[in-house]
Image (cartoon, one colour):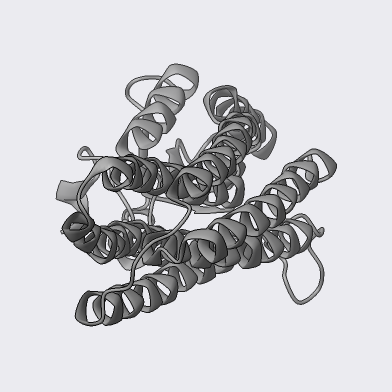
Length: 311
């Protein structure tokens, strides 16, 4: 999986290098601050692609003595840094747009600039679509973040090309649209950056799995252990593509160790059937012992059937 994910990270880097060269070429030809804004974002794309590659390599290192749960959270660091870089680029674009608005400059060779910008957008679009498919296949937030970043670049490029097309045939006074468009692009880019940072913070703070996945876990427990099974302290989190699940399972005190072990193995298989690759920890407790109802100490979700006895 790591080898395949790395291939897509290399694809992102290659696409960023090519589009960066095309966009800066278009900017030098036209002098458009909009094209400059687009070129600056391609520099961020390249930096983000390199960070993504390093994160994928780090995240797939096996667990060791210092990182017993693995290195999956490196992916959140990567997407968070990418979001921060996007925001920094947006500030630079907004500043350049305001400066050009206050000091308008004539635009040149717009036709050539439009052709070059369109070619750069096409490269990013193809790379982004390929990476999004890979992100879904490998459940990789780094590839997803990088692909969405490239798609943001595609849409801003499309808007930019459309505006430059209007200015190509409009009177010179319409060239004020150039810095205005650059500022609008900056606002749009900030939105994407903030969204990536928020998701990364949620992962680093061990945000629980989405409700649909938690419901799938609860259904799996009920199907294997029986609908009347009591459990509590159900906790979930995710580190990269790996999901972690742990909870307390209440069984009759007379149940043998072998029987409870077999039951836990069955429950684990049931959960992994809906969440492949999940790492599951089950703590077995005798349901006749009042001390077993200690889910409130641990936290997490508690089965409603257990809550009255916990109070």
